[in-house]
Image (cartoon, rainbow, N blue to C red; front, side, top):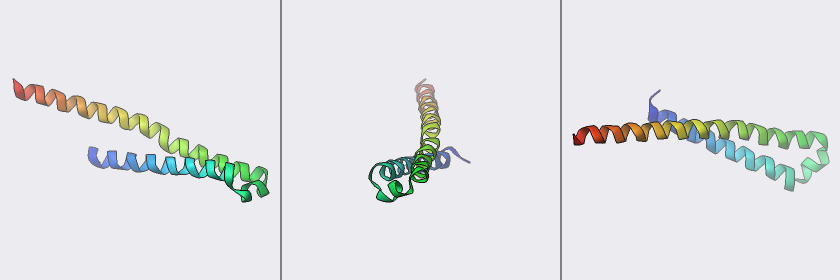
Length: 83
């Protein structure tokens, strides 16, 4: 998989993670149905939040490292072209 495609997949993963985080928070704070379900409702909303964290946090770290590496390579290439 080339770098551009990997970056696109990571960005999509971050968006999915943020959506799941927002959904979990909405379900936990504002949904009457989750309150009716009791402990099961809490588990559903907590699961959405947990899966959202799993999708978003590690991918942000990896994407940051990947983009920093790419920027460093571009900077080295431009410095080599000047010489």
